[in-house]
Every structure is written in C-alpha cells, then in structure tokens.
Image (cartoon, rainbow, N blue to C red; front, side, top):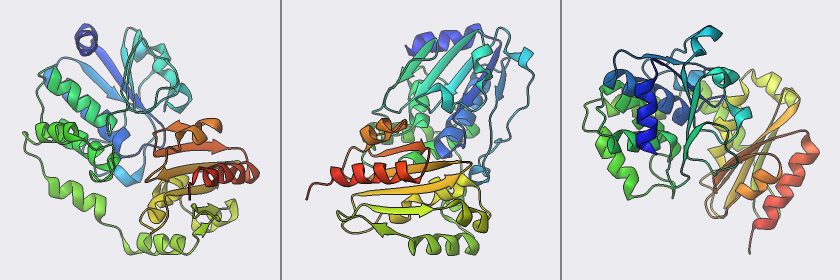
Length: 311
C-alpha cells in the first residue's frame, strides 16, 4: 500500500492536503508534516494545505493555510488526513481532484477515497505518516519532523494513552534523528495564560456525576455567549478537566453551539466508541465524539454511558 501511495505522489505535479475541520494538534501536525515531507523529497511538486484554522496550534511552523482556486484541483492528488467520514473534511473540494488518498487512524466507518490506509492501532495520524516516511526511506527535514512529532505528542496524550506502543517510540525516535527543538513544542503545549487557567478552573466547578460516577459538564448556548470563546476551546479544550478524577472511568463534555450539542467522550477503561457511533459520531475506542441535535439526546447518550459502568 505504501508503495502505491508513493507512486501516486511521484505521478502528480500538484498535491493538496486536507484534514478534518476544527483541527487538533494531530490534524495540523499531520497536514503540515506531510506537506514538508513531500516538498523536501520532491522539491518540484506544488503542495498546498487547505482548511479552517485554530489559534491553539498556531505555533506549528508554516501553519498558515493556502487559498486556492477550484482549477488547482484539475489533475491533482488530494490527501485527506485524520478523519473517518467525508462530512468531517475541511473543504470538500478534495472531491474535485483526479486522485484521492486517505491516511487515518480512527476506527473504520466507510471508504470514500480512491486509496486508503487506515489503521486504528496507531496512536496518531501523524505517527502513521511518519511510519510511512520511515518505511519508504523518505528524508526528513526539521519542519516535517517537528510537525509530525507535535501530532504524535498531542494525540497520545504526551505518550500517556494506552494507544502508545513500542512502535510509537520507534517512530518518534526516527523523527528525532533530525534536529528540532522539543522545548519549543512542549512550552507551547503546556504553557497557558492566566485567563485560560481561570477558565479551566471555572469548568472544574461545573463538573457533575451520574449515579455510577460518569463525570460530565454541560455548557448552554447562553453560557457560551457569556464566555465569548470558540466552540473548539470549550468542547475539545475542556473535556480533560475531568480526566484525572479518582473513581471516574468515563467523562463527557457537552457544548451547545450553532443549534447543536457538541459531545466529546473520553474513557480510561471502557470502549465508548459504539455509543458515539449510535448517535452518529465516531473516533477511537476510548476517545470519541458526536454532534447531537438537542439536550434531550445528550442526556440519552449520558444514560447509555452510565450503563457501560460495571460496578
């Protein structure tokens, strides 16, 4: 499979890289890392990155997205990264490309690209792409290595989650054969301004529990308006305020936004993915999400999570 992907890269002069909307560190790290991996090994290729952006990971070098015309897709190769379903792609123009390839590490839902390499045993999409580079003997530069490393670090929870394996560290070691600053990455990942720390503290005070100790936070649209924060910061950014509570094996963050309820589900013990899929979402066994129509549905999902707990 890797040989076919490498062949397609060689056979296309223009390559456009997409990933999921509301990008996290893995989506952006994968996207920017793949761009510089291709540019470094095939300098004559025209490589573009497209999609929406988030301030949280703007420290990744060369993270500004390209604005391109539809005509650029004529005869082009489009990658889509770090997503399990087509409705999650940021900028659906990938469909205009001559050839499409998907790299993904989520649990498989459906095929929607010409060539697909999906493997949920990888801790991150960035790790999968780095493994592709290593397997194909591609050369790294500092930009590709640091971006891919950032993706690996963020999606493995700083190498804490049980998706981390010996292969994770082998691939990370491969990336570290190229000099780049680990300090710059970790300072940006760990450092928070005082206002954000106060925001996290306010969310800790919002934590509730079901009768079986599923922890949850629910933020209404009125509260969102008062906070004046984007939905990503609240939904994805606040879910792990509940991650290290003793006796809590499942936690979920609900956020009302644009007429829907964003749902981020995490677990240290249980496979919560089937619950997310039941409600139209997906992801990983212990980290999934869904977009729900209303609070009533959110509470039904919470009840299903509660039923997973074995006392």
